Length: 295
Image 1 (tube, rainbow, N blue to C red):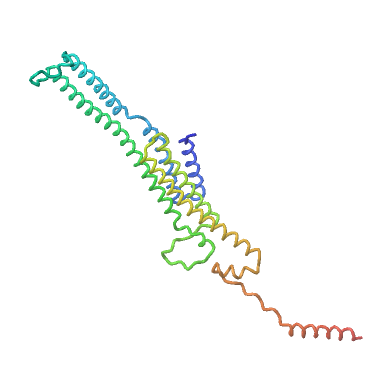
Image 2 (image 1 turned 180 degrees about the vertical axis):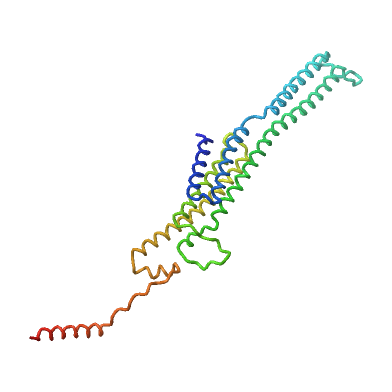
């Protein structure tokens, strides 16, 4: 199972259209459009990062071929020039045969060539990995910035402000959303954060680098933490809306609810006292009896 770039891009485009339908003039709409462009570039960059860098690999291959050829040539020359009896490694004066001296020098030169070419080949292969890592980390840094911008858009969206008449100052953020619109706005932010983590995962799907994988894990943890904060706001919003519906259906709770919401409590007319009710009943009975005794 692999992540499909086309499905991720299609999902981001769908969310962008949904946000534009509900909030055509909101900054979140433009931010989602930017996320769509980043997702499109990520699909291309991830494929490019997974591909080998040909000029580096060709150079490394040539160096490896030259290394093998050099070692074989030095070994051939050394063997050809060693024509002494192995028992005659040294004469009586302590001098070594000429062939053994040449063989020793050839061995030293061969080791130097082997070390030099090995270091060059290792450098080229590590260079390819470093170039790919730099590309991936640069793209992941852009996604990390987008995640923080999404979090900034929901920072001032307080659920309680939809249900209370707060004493706002002139610098307080304006709350113009209904509970339904605020719910959808927060949900859109959560979905965008989730897609940001999915886009980041594209870069390490075919590029197994420890630093890049760690950066992707960091972005996923960041977006998950931000999504949890948003869902806490959504839960508070749902609880406040349910409490409002219960109090609206029960008149006995309306006074306390209105006071919590900052609304004026309606004044009920005073109930008549028991003494006044009894006197009114007595007068009504006497008037009825007088009417009955009249001819």
